[in-house]
Length: 293
Image (cartoon, rainbow, N blue to C red; front, side, top):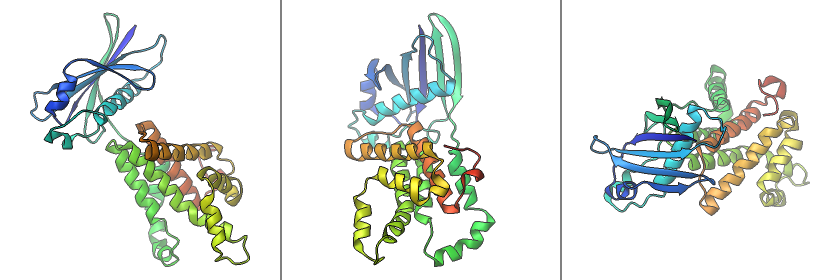
C-alpha cells in the first residue's frame, strides 16, 4: 500500500488550533479518509501541518496532483478549525501567496518512493491571460475613449475577472467562482436584454426585461450559445456546460455554504474569461486555437 504525506509550514500560529492538531486525527473529504496533525514550528508565529492518506491500488498520480489534493484537505481543515483566541483572525488559507513549498513523501511499505520539496506556483488560466493581454495592447488603448463614450464597456467584468485571479492566487477559491459567475452575468445581460426587447413593438417595454429576469441562468446561456450569438458560440459546447457548472457551484456556495476547490476556481476563471473574450472581440471559432472548449 502506497502512503502519501504532505507537509507545509503555514504563516500563522494558534494555540487553540494546535490543541485540535497535536493528536493525529482523521477527516473524511469527498469519500476519502485523511489523517492530519500539526505542531508549532521553530519560527515563532508559524505552524507545521501534515496530512496523509493511502493511495488506491494502481492509482495514478503526479506530484502536482498530490500537493493540490493535500492542500485542499488542509484548507478544508483550516476553514473548519475550532479557534477561539486572538490569533484566529490571522488564519489564512494555503496558497502560493502564503506558502512557498510543500514537502511530499510517498512510501510503499518501508520503501521510499518520493521525498521532495515541491514549490507552490501559480499561472493564470490561458483564456484569462489571452483576454488580459488583448485588452492591454495598443489597440485597446486607442479605442478606450470611444468605448467609454458609447457606454459599451467591460470595466466591471474586467475588474471581477482580475479580482478572481487574485483570489485564486490567495486561496480564496469560492470568492473567485462567485466573481466569475457575476462577470458572465454582467457581460451577457445587456446582450440578452437587447435581443429580448427587439421582439417587442415597444423596445422600452418592461415585459421584455421581466421575461429575461425570470429565465434560469442555464436557459439564458443556451439562448446565447444557440441563437443570439450562435455565430461565435454554437461550436463551444464544452464551454457552455462549464459555464452552467459555474452557476450551479455559485448557487451551492451562496445558498448551501459550499466551498470551491482550486481546480473549480481555475476552470471558472478560464471559462468566464473565454466567453467574455469571444463576445468582446467577436471571435469566430476559426480564430481560436482550441475548438469546442
